[in-house]
Image (cartoon, rainbow, N blue to C red):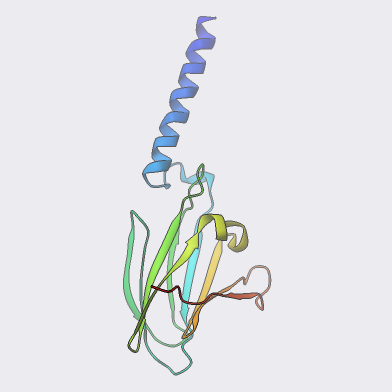
Length: 145
């Protein structure tokens, strides 16, 4: 009986530690969720340069200016226990400035699998699901500020 309760206590402590690390950043025990490769491509048809700056609550991916059809890419690992991974980006072109959530785990996890592709257009971002069908495009308007 004593060894069973020690085992139960050990398992409970391990689960508590995993849960705490999950809340802290979602990157602990990284073998449990596959890495997502994020690709954001400048699709502004007038050849404008696109400024992109992406981050989540713990990681700042940084700012980069990209030319037409040039990608801005990064990787991350979604949260395992609680679907709370969120990456958002600021986009600047011409005199316009917009923000958009490029990865919302509840919205995107099943739709994008291991690759998330966005094309940034003047009217808004479009997600291309290249793994399922390269012609599968879902566009979103820029959110109102």
